[in-house]
Length: 412
Image 1 (cartoon, rainbow, N blue to C red):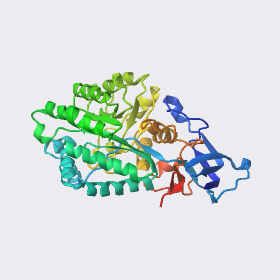
Image 2: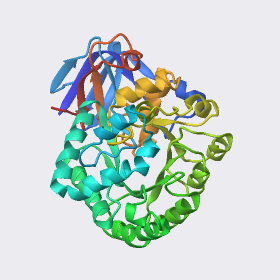
Image 3: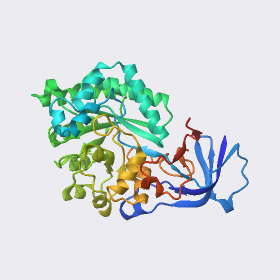
Image 4: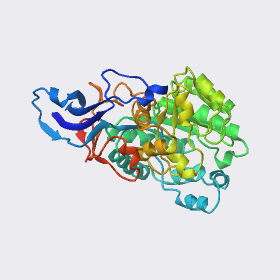
């Protein structure tokens, strides 16, 4: 099947060759072709160029994209899409004056979601999660990472990871699985948190590895959750099983989690709302990708990741949603793009690079996704008629997407 798009207003993120990641001042550069054509053959990007140079192509279908823009699908490298129920009551509690941490101390937050997850049949968890996944695909997400972490028991964590596997089997986008057993301390271990970490390391982790249910390991390295020592112990244990770190750090406090992540060759360190100079220094020269989650900052009214400090230090930055029931009940990457520009002072070019190429790097799918490059998977967005790509983050309440294509096929 050959699908040809003609008269494209602008074709974004065009890379002749694979680019691993974009850092520092290079993030301001977004290569594009104006008045372009774009050829998809089966599930791959076959060719592209300027309209005056369009060769004679025997296409099965031709789409006139006049006034419209084509760009790669968003890659969302940090989500918690698999969960049960919701936490709208806590939303109301925060409006009435309680902080996120106060709600957690009362048994809400992650523990609330864990209780609901444990009580919900696995098939129902799958159905709820599949509905969310379909919603984000329609919003332009063409690859997603999903974490466990709302089980907090061996059976609960395994249930979540089995649901992620079922999503991987039933949906055509890349889905990466992350084991986040060290997400919070269950109530029954409140007086002995070391025992819970021992359970995660000595019992759940080997079972996850034996069943090959996860590719990555995560830990919430934060005051009141898991210390840097805990993080080091968990990541060292996970390395023996071949699980790579992608960790939560610096959401509320800087306690040395970024340095620990870098020392363990973490693929990414995520959140970074609080960032010290020593954290920047730890990331210099590292292969670890910093990941910002601005819709979490919006929802919790906490500081935004200091993107300018990161990028101006010559570092790369990726963007993700943190889609979860407690702190970010949204998987809309378009909103993330807008918040990055409005609240984090990123340019539209930087934000698009962060949500495509750099986000693909944070999921290790950069060789197949994240840019318009010949041979890569044909996961892309066709916008409605819009004046320019700056309109995407500018019109933050408007859905500018007309169609989404996964593996060369339009999402229905």
